[in-house]
Amino acid sequence: MPILVQRLNDLIVDKIEIPQKGLSIGRSVKNDVYLDDPSTSQIHSKIETKELKDGNLIYFISDLNSTNQTFVNGNSIKEHLLCDQDVIEIGVNQFKFVDENEESLAATQQFKKSWIPGILILR
Image (cartoon, helix red, strand yellow):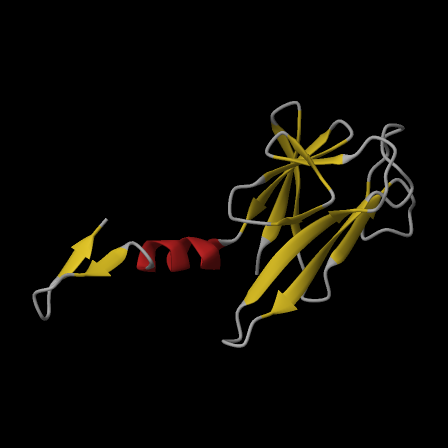
């Protein structure tokens, strides 16, 4: 299961598992992830999941028309497909998206068949 590693001033503050139903992030205590930060909107952003035909899950983060925007890897986003090690910035808070399953898929995709039967090339 993917997690968000919350960092503040380069210190790990929390590790949050992302459930299949997704989660909401904001300054309201009604959110799944509550941020006590005046630069964060009441309901700032959300992470949603989508199941692919092969059964794997992909994760999207969406900005919910927040005042100060949501950033991924330094870029302002409206919606973004999350990849392992993406850095999400909401107000003064920073989260790293960690998906160990995606790392293993990425390693698998590094192989390429050669024209010689039975030989695989590692890229």
